[in-house]
Length: 152
Length: 360
Ligand code: SF4
Ligand code: SF4
Image (cartoon, rainbow over all chains, first blue to last red; front, top):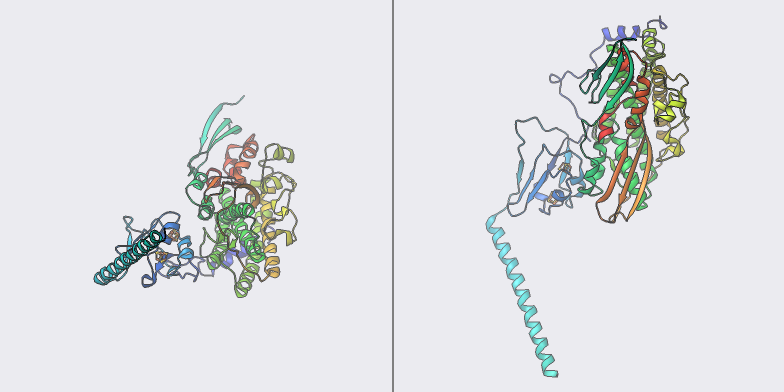
């Protein structure tokens, strides 16, 4: 039989076995752990450096530093993982689970919790420090010049 | 003399997953000449090198095609590694070889399925693709993607395969090999299948050389040309013979590809046995210096050629890919001459066309 009907065995087997395909959506699809489904961010660790935004090949990420926002257009993301590799704080990761279809390309915004007052205080302190440093430098320069003049 | 007519074939045709157009000059049912025209899926990927830096380009390169994506990424990375004088760790070479052969396996199984579909044997088509699915699952487990793998980087690969994973894959490959062996008996021995393949689409060795055929198309014409023999990646450590056929017809092409499936199983087995324990990538610093490099690798469909020219900045001057389907189109027009109109879809399939590769 093998010579003339090499397929007969398979046909018989198929009659008595389960379908080879997953019965989606009745049986859920299980993804292996390495599946590159979508990018997740651990927003507390992010320092808003913008490395991910600069490295993303299709330009899907936008980092808005003043607003403490990290945004991603999941429909532009090609799941390459380059941002994950580049992030200095290792707060990005590619995890299983694909973007579900949608009517329009919505941008996903992740807000980093921050206190505006605290932020303003920090900013003021920074400005004050810069100003103090500048004054100090100017004073040093003036003193040096005076010393030089006294010498000549 | 019969009646002459010109019949347009494609760009939309049930047998073609991708668009290519042929003008068939017929005399009654006999094809006298075929004039191909391409350009329906051109995306300008090569010109992106001037906008994406050389690291990002690795992701663009692998998106040239969905079947040989691993090879495209690897070929591009190899040109830059050559320019930057980066020595890729040995384990990365082996991993690349394993993934490359897995690509060949799934590509050839896909082709077998399409061929079966082309001559109307639907259940054979389903069975080929069922087996192929197992390879895609292994790709997903090892790289995280089923089609686009994103594991190549300049200087090596990104993901490693553990001992357990390799052992597990080996077991699954052994199972798969048994199934494929049963399946291929249908392709090679079944008389209905034979009657659709034998003596159809003759391409002699002489014609293959004259028309510049590549890959299984050339090997089925008796020409032992295989870029893997040049010993890139880990192929210099692997023992294998170039598979050829002296049948010159569609049956010969089927035979060569089936032979290569079993050869790929064997190469993977050797790789898993020999894989050394080293790093999987080396860090590259700075931009590539000014230079130019050419790399030739063996894709499932034949020889692919990659050229990169750098100018010392992070952007490249030029990247050029020549893909096997482009090389095989002239050979296709040769095989179509004198065939019956009903055999045209089948003959187009026997070159294993990949139009997205061709047009980039
Ligand atoms: S995975 Fe790739 S495409 Fe997606 S956001 Fe990161 S860098 Fe951009
Ligand atoms: S690279 Fe990392 S730390 Fe920097 S902005 Fe992006 S997510 Fe935040």
